Length: 188
Image (cartoon, rainbow, N blue to C red):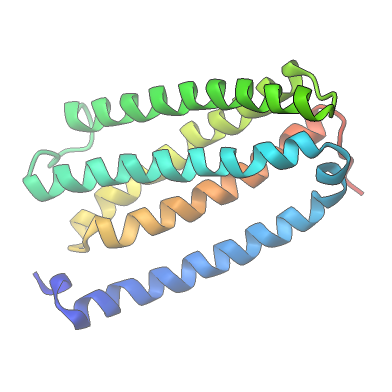
């Protein structure tokens, strides 16, 4: 297992670091395009980091579970595998309940601060972002974990950083799509 040496860790980790850095730069550029909406609707600005964390954290949780399963030899096949299925179901449950809970907390903060954003808008934006996380981030997590393991790479070192950054990217894109759907932002 060459990936437990310093050379192996650097060799496998450095390209991942470059990829995730460029993903973060791209997320920053996308955020720049949402600046007007986020200033006009400060509740969405408060909601954004939380929604980004839900995607990245639950995706990383899923990647960690799958990585452990691969290390233990429990996930040799990806299809019809109870470890994969149960891990995905657990991540979906955590994401959905986190999205609902956070939406309610943000709505209470919204009322306290007097921003006036409706509960419907907050819940809808959360639902859209969490749905994208479930569909995109989790699919990439399962696939990348399998490919990483088959390629002889440690999924802990390769998948988790990529998934955390992908959660940010999907979250920002989900916020942009939500803003367009609800007429808060118009593409120029």
